[in-house]
Length: 241
Length: 306
Image 1 (cartoon, each protein chain N blue to C red):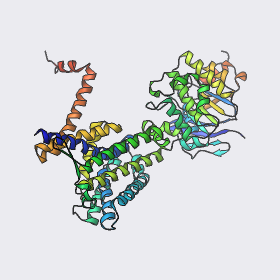
Image 2 (image 1 turned 90 degrees about the horizontal axis):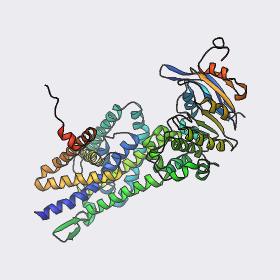
Image 3 (image 1 turned 60 degrees about the horizontal axis):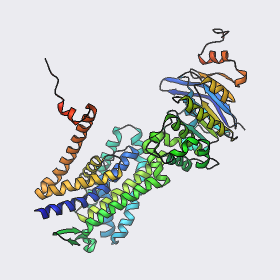
Image 4 (image 1 turned 90 degrees about the vertical axis):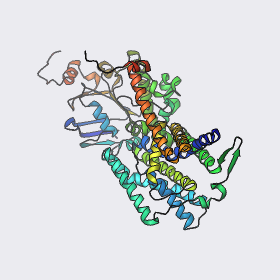
């Protein structure tokens, strides 16, 4: 059965329609990368799936079960975890407490403190330090680790490399490669870095002005097609890039 | 002279324990739920009145009354958070103030209607606890009840500290206080956490009420001054800091007892003046920090017109 299916999702920020009739699905073990320009609706889509933003219309199903009416914390308990934009760690709590919180309020499963620390080596020495003092890469690793501690079937990662140094991006993706090696968990990753997205994803969806304008496997997509979709150009405007 | 001063110092510190208990509940509601409960003092009196009914009308022993009233008030806190405060919070920042102001007025007049305006006290029901004490060298005399109150305050704050640091509920409370949205994304039901915080706050108010009724007289309209004292302790000690609340309570208690050595009227005034002084100092401190230090602040002159 399909892990996640989103059907004709429309979401608004006040009068602005951020997502228009977006449909997508994710299989177990699959990595889907969302690409698109700023304001294309990528973060809003993740937040709608996680229940942090209320969709105006449309449905979100996990394992075929309708999640649309559930609030964010209830979705965590059924298997959706989001590492949000801005990381949003609890600055006055230690890393250990940040991770324990998700373990205590999420689901039980394979992802334990030990396993998260094995996947994110850099976090080991920080365990008992307050998260408020972490660097960008450490905060991202901690946020992903916290989402994993809830043992999701579907992991949502927003803006993985935004604001990180190249070395930190490298580190986070090395850890993520290990995380996806696990198998059953599906992932949706928002990634600004196109090259990174194409090399990491099983499938890519490009959003433009709130609509899914391009979908495919990285191997099947040309750079030209992606560029067109990215900048919202119609087929006729750019024929050869 | 120095003897009465020393006595005032000791009594002030001990009184601070009582204020800390009352203030801790107010601080918890504000820090975690972002809810200013103006009925906190009236709920404290409600706790005292319920204990008084249990003891005077039903003939219960005091310990049983206290042991019943505190969980009862906690349940009331849970229910009011769920049925009333949550909705008030959802409707903007002004509504909680109006709602709790109304709740306070309702409680005051409801208790007045039911129990009349007579002053009541548990003092007559706690045996020699209300007057016994220890004589210390130097002419110092400390009462058993104030010492018990202070010890209780340390124990309550210590337990709350442990609860916040060591238990899943405590972690959920701290996370929700820092970022409710992120807490929900970690699976925390923020509304349940808020209800738990309200339950703890109401239990602390009830404990404060019982302690007040043991050492003093209580009337249905005794709540608002207690609310003001609690606010002062919270603000002096720093909002959201548990042990700061104890410091704030002690500072307030000291100001009141030291003021009381001058005259009975100065007692309350001294507490308010300390609050103003602390607020004034904080404003100046921030201003000095913004300008690059105290010396720079002193040098600042008004705008020149030349």
